[in-house]
Image (cartoon, rainbow, N blue to C red):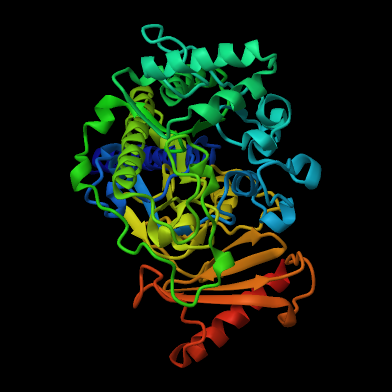
Length: 530
């Protein structure tokens, strides 16, 4: 009996040992499979929004109704102190798409194509094609004046699209903008008038019409797809069908036009807000001690036929028009919020949220009457600060960071999140150390930076957690040239803790002397590295 029991125990021990060995192999295989899945290349949904400042509920703006921005914020990281490198579309988009600063892309205006000014640079989606991705986009990704054939054709393995199949219930939008029947009728009359005068080229006809009629706002009782951005969402969902069937990781760019002027959006989004309760800019005058050339006279807005074209720096837009413009800007943001919701719904329906890196960004901010300024085109906070959000694999949920970061950081961050090998050309830094559940702050830079040109002067700025310091360098200086302190024709310092509205330039105030010295050294070191 004893021998039998010993035999059974031995047999059992052999079985248990064998089972444990098999379990160990299975666990090893599962771990390896899990690691392989974690290291697999991820999809990238790249959401670009034109002229969007952080006027959003997830940024603490209580007057805003933007539930889908809130939804995305709960899915990942919201950077609250993020800045563009140049506050106008062309340079900003060239930088984010190449990961290179404006003085490397050599794009400082709306017309230069980085493919010509810096032909050795590679775009983000172009590089992803070489890494096995399918890439495509809809809407505005590059600025229209900075795009070779096919909206920078090198960037796409599948054609970029600009749909114009407007909701047939309302017909084609006039000049891709306007759906108000009376506006469309008048614009058609002006078009025929231009043709009768012998004007035949479409661009010149457009100019003829817009010099006579170009409303800055429109609230029409139409569907989302009666305007461009609704079409972009519709097209993006169709592109997703094709991308998912490809069997490859994919990059999908969705470039929304609103809230760019003109502020046109379906009436239901205007109805979300009471115009009489809209908050106007609290500081509507020129800041004390700031060089006049730091400002501009918002010619982009004055180009609209219902705006006084005689307004200049220091002049206020009439309050009723301010309320109308801000109302329109807010309505456009809520319109885009609805489009964002449709994108997130579709990713959720497809079950691919965990396999998709989502990044959302604005190409610059927008002045809404502060400093008597409108539009972008400056080094002030309202022009440079943007919404910047990440979600997906490796991004902890429902986080905010006030660490100063740059839009140019998007390039290396997305690659690291998507498990793509880094490209060496980037001037940005990966923000992944800030994105996990135990964020680190040692990302080798404690400031954001940006620049803006006024004629032959280039204003270079750094923005820390509390201050912005700016130097205006004359004679077409660029940061790839030797730093010359004698070339500085103006300086600015703003303290966002003591003076968040930038009411005074503190650069000559004795109590800030040590801060100015520290920030000057930081900016000089930064420029010298470029």
